[in-house]
Length: 336
Image (cartoon, rainbow, N blue to C red; front, side):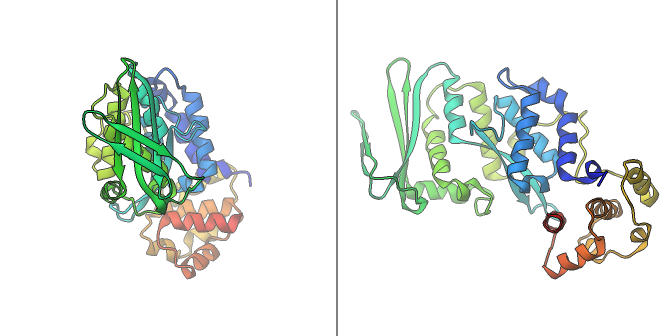
């Protein structure tokens, strides 16, 4: 159809990212550019379609947080990731993107202090040879046994750091300690949480965070720790990051001036509109509590993708779809 750009989630995200381009440039560390941030974020959304169900504002915020730390969230370097997460505190619940810093990101941040010679982290599996001693003459020995990657068999995670003055230290966390920290993390039970999708990496990251408390830190490291604390506790008031107030972002649907405003806007973009659809009842969207402009946006989206709105809603209702994001996801599946 001629009007995919009006309603397609990919285009809505692109518009939001482009609108934030100047803000990205204003906060980004020297090592990243707005052009790369936008390109990488779009690539991440393509690889993980659930990101397209997230609010555009949350994606822009996560990208901006990464930019300030000198990361390109979602890039092949795997320093930081964009992760979809359902916010059940909203009524109705909405999907939001969060910036999750990888353990590799923490290693990168540690080197920026200029005082770290090396930093590494590992997990220990049940059949590995692992010994460590604390005290005046600390020792650590780890000999892996094979290529075990079963996260249920992880018994320790540890980090080792060497400073440029020649000093070295390490931190070891056992499985009970790791799981205690995991259980305190807000949203850790979600299927999309990195605690479940990348368990070993999160255990290594936890060891690094605990082990770097006494070493010199870069400003970015301190900010990263605050970001993680906010995500783990669900208290975003801990963050200094924010989107500039002057930045207006399109949300899941843009405000419209009633039915005629929606139709005129759609027609101007070349969409083929079924006039009868606007007067017909839309049971599922009404049941989901979607306001008028969002119901009409959904009708336009369906028409623009050669889908019959009433048919989509009837099938979605029969399938037990219970929120707006899931409705669009279900419709995307019908379109594919």
